[in-house]
Image (cartoon, rainbow, N blue to C red; front, side, top):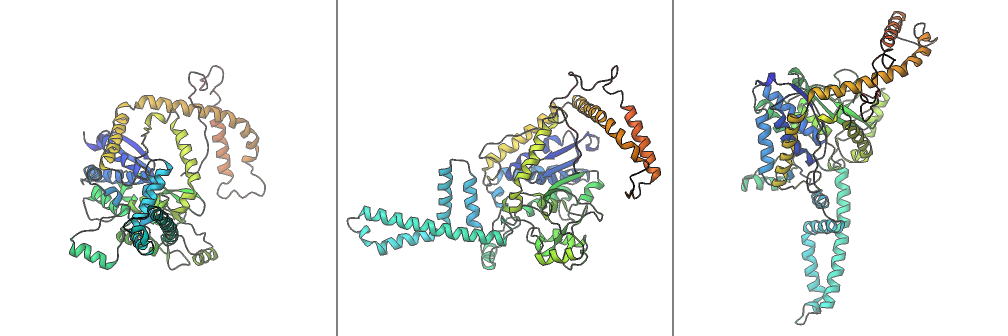
Length: 520
C-alpha cells in the first residue's frame, strides 16, 4: 500500500532524558500502519517527535525518511559510548559530570557515595600521587625495614581525609563557577571545543575527529531523514506544507508556564533571542537561519523576535529539552536590556530550554504529568496510550548505558508499537469517546440553562458603561438567539422519555470533567 493511502494517526511522546531511546522502535513499527499527521513531544520526547516528523517528511518527498531513522537507532545500539558522547561537558565541568554519572547509577546510598569519591579521586589522581610522595618524605619511619603499620595507617587516613576535603572544596568551587558561566548546566548541548593545541594534536597527529554533541547529532539526523544531506534546515512551515503538524512544549521563564512551539507568526509572539547567546547552544547554521528569519525588537539593537513557523525543528527540540543541571539554559536578558525593553512598553519574555530554572519548576512539571496520567486513565484515552516501564539502570540519567541495554529499550519500543498497531480498536475507542462527550454535554447544558436564564436579560441591551467593542447590538442579538436555540435543542438530554447519558450502563468510568484551559 502506498504511504499516502495509509490511515492517519497522532503521536505524542513524553520526556525522560535517555529513556527517549524507546521511541524509535515504536515509530518504526507504527509507520508501516499509519501516516503521522500530528506529532507532539516534550523534553526527550521532543527529540523523538522531530525525528518522526523529519522521517515522515522525507518519506513523502522521496528521501531516506524512516530508513535513516532506523540507521540512527542502530548506530546507538551498536556503537559503544555513542550515547554518552552526545553529552559533552566543558573542561571545568568534567569532574562534576563524571560524579553525576556515578550518582545516577542504581545502587544503595553508600555505594553511590563510594562511586562519587572514586570518580573524584580519578579526576585528581595527581594529588593521590602527591600524598604517597608526602608520606615517603614526612613519614619515613613508616617505610623502614620494619614498617610501622600503625603510624602508616594513621598518616594515610589523615592525608586521605585532607585530600577528600581539599578535592571536595575545589570541586564545589569549580561547579559553582561552571554553572555560572554555562547557565546552570554542565553541557552546552553542542560540541565542547578543547584548547587549540590539543585539537591540533588530536586531528592532525592522531588523525581523529571530534564526535558531535547532542544538538549537532540531532540536527544531522533530521537533515538526513528529511533531505538526505545538506539543505536548508527543516522548519515547521515545511512540515505544514506536507500536512505534518508538529507541536513541542517549552517553558516561559517570565510567567512560569508552558509554551507551545511553533510560536505564532503574528504580533502575539512576545519571545526574543540574542545571537551571541544562541551561538553557545546551537550549531552555526541554525543560528544563521534564525537571524535571516527574524527582525530586531523595537528599542534594541541586539534582541530579535523569535521566529514562528520559520523556526527550524532542531531549534525547537533544543528549547524543549529539560535536563536539570545536565544541559545549559538559554541565557536570559541582562538587567539593562530588561529595563530598556520595559521603558519602551515591551515585557521581556524568554523561552527556557533547560537548566536550574527548569529544575525549580519540577513541581510544575510534576503537576502537568499528573494531569496527563489522569487523562490517560479515561476510557476515551487509555486505549491509545502505551506505558513502557524501565528498570533503575535503564533510561533517565544513565548516560553510559551498554549497547545491549539500549537495544533492549529499542525492542520494548518496538513491542509497544506492535501492541498499538494490532490491539487498538478504533470503532470501540470511538464509541468510548462518544460516551464521554455526550455525558459532558448533558451535564454542562443542564448546569448552563439556569445560569443563562439570569444572564440573558442583559446580553442584548448590554451592561451600562461596558465597552463591547466590535460585539455590537446586532452581534449580541444573534448570539442570544443562537444560545437559546442551542439550549432548546439540549432540553431532551436526560429528560423523561429522552436519551439519558448518565445511566449506569452508559456512564463512563472514571467520570470526566470539562474545563476551559489555555491552548498549550
